[in-house]
Amino acid sequence: MGTITIVLSDDIEKRLREAVRRLYGSGKGGLSKIIGDALESYFATIERSATESGSSFKALKEGVLVAEANTLDELASVLRSKGVEPRGLRIISTRHVKPVARGGYRARPT
Amino acid sequence: MSPYFLDNTPVLEVILENPIMNKRFPSDGEALAVVDTGYEGFLLVPESIFHELSLEEFATDQRQLVLANGLSVRSVGTFGKVVLSSFKIRFDGFIEAVHGAEEIVAGTELIRNFTITLDYCVRKIEANKCK
Image 1: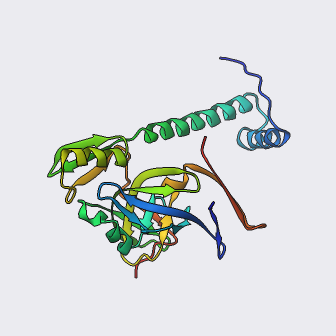
Image 2: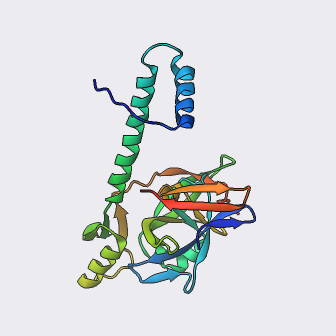
Image 3: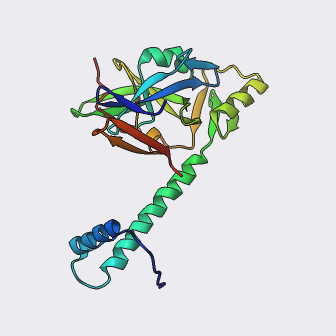
């Protein structure tokens, strides 16, 4: 267990203490718990972000890998250099596309 | 130009590209994309724009989009590029089309790259790329 001294603005400190009181009451350890949880969540967010920014793209022709690159521009360049006909290519990415997603308020069927 | 309000709706100026087929939309200038935090995808476009970018010439993927009223619609999509010239940045992501869509919609997969502040009091939007 480590001990860290940090400096927060008055507003953040007030909100933090209110959240601790609301979630953990006045018992001991609430402040450390909420800071720990918040940092876990923050690390997960930035790690996810770093992983996705390093996503790559693959071009498949009839199921066979014909090119691979880190960006679509690079993929286009590889395909051109190999003289691959782009029609019918399947472009896939390491970035996951959810099979079902919320469509928002602007997407509406006719 | 940075994002701004159009009739109280936040919009971004974007250029869409299919670098593999060397296509761009619009052919000149920029198009408006509505920012919709209720849309979980990257970019939703009308079928006509999907066609103009020749994205339908790839083997496309389909998925379901659940609308606010609980109904689902089928979207067709593949990967393309969005250029935000005001930020001098570009993103690759899943661009999808839905039958009947009439506008370009930027969803959370795209805007998660930014800190966006909507100030309706002075009708100003501030957007900065995540550090």
